[in-house]
Amino acid sequence: MVCFAKDPAYAQSTGSESDRGEKQFTPGFQITPYPRIKDIKISGSFPLLEREILNAMQLYPGDVYHPKMFSAKEAVIAEVFKNEGYIAPVVNLDAAEDPTDENFVVYVTIDKGNFFHIRRFEITGNRAFSTTRLKLRIKTCKSWLTPDFMRRFKKKVFNKDIQNLIRFYRRKGYPEIVVNSNVNKDAKTQNASIFVTIDEGPRYDIEFQGNKEFWDVTLKKDLTLFKEGNKKDFGLRKSIRKIKKRYRNAGYKDCRIEIKSEKKQEAGMPVRNIRLLIHEGPQYVVNSVNLTGNYAFDSKKIKKQILTGTPGVIANGAWVQETLEEDKLAVTSLYLKQGYMNTVVKDEIKSHKDIKKNTTYVDITLNIKEGVQTQVTSVTIHGLNVLSYSKAIEAITLKKGSAFRNYMIRSDENTLSSLISEKGYPHVTVKGTAVISKDDTQAAVVTYEVDEGPLVRMGQVAYTGNFLTKERVIENELELNQGEPFSLNKFLESQRNIRDINAFDSVRFKTYGLKEKEDKVNLLLELEEKKPYYIQLGGGYDSEREFYADILAGDRNLFGLNNV
Image (cartoon, rainbow, N blue to C red):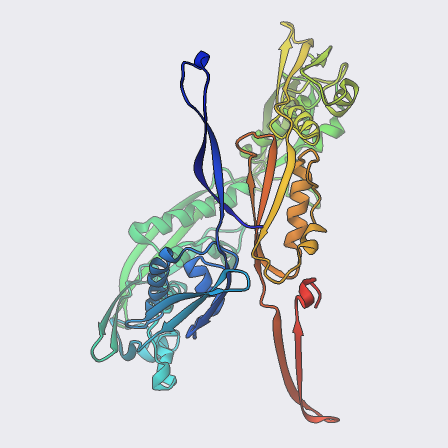
């Protein structure tokens, strides 16, 4: 069965006098099957793989045959080869009909022609590193080590070379590096001349002073300017922010960093010496964490929710106000899950300094105002027909007597929708509401309004692209049968099963009637089969067999039954 085009036609009937003598027209459709592409044969694709060609032109076996699209596909493929360095590739797409099934075999013929040869590659402006050393890091330059017929200029490779060159300079201490390039191509001589100009900028020497908490090697990890550059000192400022954050997370909230910068010349090369003077300040360490006002939960359970704590095997005991704010939200969330909708958590900080250790010890108290627990007093579901009331109540979370959580209304909506949808009602909608009493002591009413929508059944299933694979192989993997209620879960399971069939390279599913809310959903499977035949060659040498060779041939889809 194949994809269909609908051409309007009209059946004329004669009306009576009571119908004002008007003629009535009943719409009808003439069904015309589209021919399909059963195979695509590509010649001249080297050095690209056939899959790269198919992906570029977005045309695969099993697709609808449209000859008018060929000219656009030819231009796309030609552009791919131009990016590979070829001067004027010529691509021709043609097709031949197979009389046995009236489908088409598409022939892609590629004449790449000549490519641009790299004849000249110059680097100027480099002083810190020799031209030879830089060229050894550039793949485009390595073409000099290859035969002439392989010295092809590839734009994508060259662009990566420039980025690799920039990364190399930055790692070596040149964050202000700028690399410009110019490629001159001559189609007549088929030659490409490449000119790379380097503005190295000064070499950066960065030293740290005053750091006791962290070693230099640790702080150097935060120097992002040697990875991202330092245009207008943006990279330097970002690096300092990262260092400050490292100290802040270790409890040094008063840490300050001064920048001392000096420009000079060393061996005729510009150098920028930067000293980062780190004033660590005292370290703030948690001495104790106390809780007050908690009656619904014991302190042990609440402390499991927070990250702030005294020094131990896992925690370093650092006091970080940002972390404490997150801890308060975590405690509030714990109460919210149990129906405490108005819980408020505040912190109280007391500290004392130990001058000898340059440490400030912090005692933290979390004052919890729990509020009143809100409970569900009644649940009502309106509009149920295909699902029993008792089963619906059993499935939802918000039941009579349970703790009320507003966010669980959405969860219960999804639960009810899923249960009803599996009965053949994929367009079901469920809307939940809650009325809370003024004193927040209970949820007076939780109501779910259900609109089941129309009953939808599974219609016909059509397959295209399975030129070798038997339909029964596909049908065995379908979880949906014609005429039964349409199930989204079974539909998804069918997709997984069919995509797991080894005979197919790709599978596309199209539904007709689902979005339109029709009473039947028809399914079209667009299949792309793998090349069935394969040959594997191998060889080697061992002491028993000496030189040997192996050959293995097979059919991935023997007799169209997905058997290897």
